[in-house]
Length: 313
Image 1 (tube, rainbow, N blue to C red):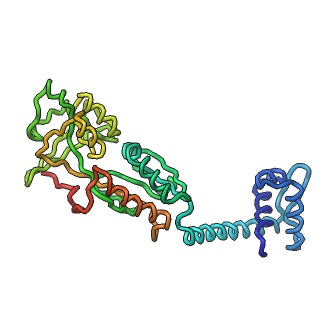
Image 2: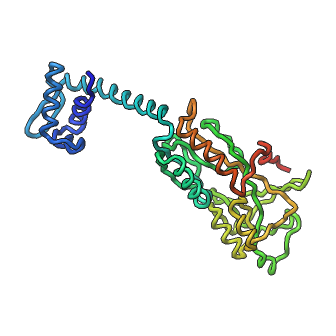
Image 3: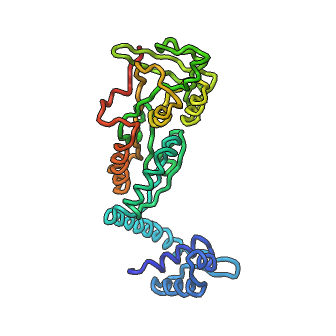
């Protein structure tokens, strides 16, 4: 049968058990739905539906036809979408999961530029810091800033490294001493980033020297922007990604603590469901994303893949 419309109408009536409801769903008149089903039954030579004043139900033949044709129609639609994606790689929609601070600071400009380049790609962007199950959430890809990933069930693509800097407001050191080494950090002044309500470990390096310091437990938060505002207000020292503190360092709101010591970097990665190959839309966004970030301060490209992970001292 060349025309799938009668089959779609029949499947909608079967799913809703109502000609009137199917007509509303399909934006057709009840009379048109009735005529379409009648022609289909005539063509197949079998009655497909039992009509009463109260309900519409499937005959045994109708149940068989519905079961077989539903799979065929779903496969047809899937193949059609795949062909459209291949032949029109810059048209469709993407669902993207993004960390909160990164999303608020970087994504508006990135999205604006992306939409100018690809106006026919719709974006559905969700901001949250928690690492999601990308398959269960139905996302096409996720952006993450984290330690080097260990999850083997998804595909990770490292984009670049994210330097972190220990910062504090100058006024903090009017009431406490300025640390010269990691060992001199006072835990009660250390603001901790953690999603697990436990203090994080700060790792520092100076040449061949490595030091690990447990941050404070007095203030713990899972949001980098909140911790930055606390640090800028003089509440303590925070170790944060450079893209969060960049403007504050430039404007003098905060200053770098322990400038001679380097803090362990994070990775900015894209991760995907277990695709056999990246879908064209996902590949398009990935390429644009990486190119865009190369012009943004606070990210380091072309660095060693192992630089972010330091062994315990």
